Amino acid sequence: MISPEFFYKGLEAMGVGFFTGVPDSLLKQFCAYLKDNVPHERNIIAANEGCAMGLAAGYHLATGKVPLVYMQNSGMGNATNPLLSLTDPDVYNIPVVLVIGWRGEPGVHDEPQHVKQGKITCTLLETMGIPYSILPEDEDGAKEVLKKCSSYIKEKNAPYAIVVRKNTFSDYPAKKTEEPPYEMSREEAIGIIADEMKGSLFVSTTGMASRELYEIRDRNNESHGSDFLTVGSMGHSSQIALGIALNLPDLRIVCIDGDGAAIMHMGGMATIASESPSNLTHIVINNGVHDSVGGQPTVSREIDMHAIAEAMGYANIFTVESEESLRKALECTEGPVFIQVMVHRGARKDLGRPKSTPVENKDSFMRNIGSI
Image (cartoon, rainbow, N blue to C red; front, top):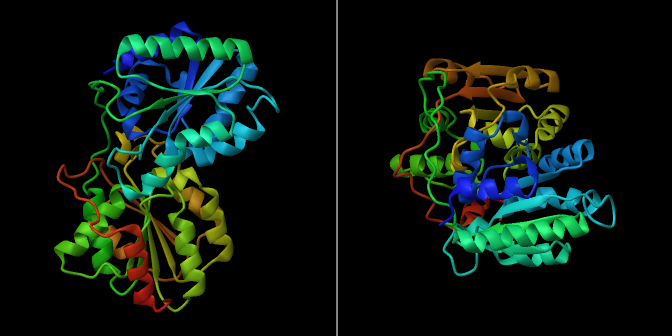
């Protein structure tokens, strides 16, 4: 395995001076090292991977130096536009080191939402004309990759990708940070929401929220037919919920969103408010971190999501911190309703994963509402 410190110092030696991106579980040790050892102004966790590319380009334009963008391979979709229309040699020819976590690598077991992306990760880089190396698991091999990357960037002044397999980085003991003592966990909040909103249709965001909703249904011996689990497509669950709400106006639609996901494509909130479906309740469970990929912070504790929802034009807005206030907010049916639920970070160590496939989940949901 490669030490995150070793990798960072190798990047620093080749002139990389700025880091930005969206954290990934395969890169969490490296991302944790950056958070603890690089000043905030030189390591910015972006709203999404496309935004990270813009930040990186701006850094290069201002300094002439080389930036680095880190991401999970699922984030390549968000980054494709700026990679092809901003940093590409045929456009502005801007150098960027891309560090990409290879979820769904062929032959390595992973969750279903990563399989397709894993198959095409290297092919996609080749199609975009971005040279890449797969990072070896030994430091001598890593030195050679960094040398190759550095030589290419110096010669071509263009992006170069380093693809990172599972278990490439060794453990890094991240420093603990204090957080407000909110009483509820995300799972407890979802349990309350599921209990109070019986008879509604649910759309849950990617990551642990969908896993927790699935297990809550199992514990309560309830059907999964009213739940669409958005296991991939981070940031898009609110728009899935909006599409359902607009076409099933007689049913209550509940979107269980996360702070990182909501921020990733925040423009969707403007569309919800503009379309103004009275039957949609948009719930953002705010734990202040990207919990599913290592607990790296989002900016949700530094901005006012309540005021943002108000400015967007939601009909009713609540921010709650307790079970009592959450249950009270869930009584509101004059939508679109926005509820921000403040919870503490973390999840159960034994949290399972859905036993059904995404297609089975979709079919069950559609049969339940009679659309198939």
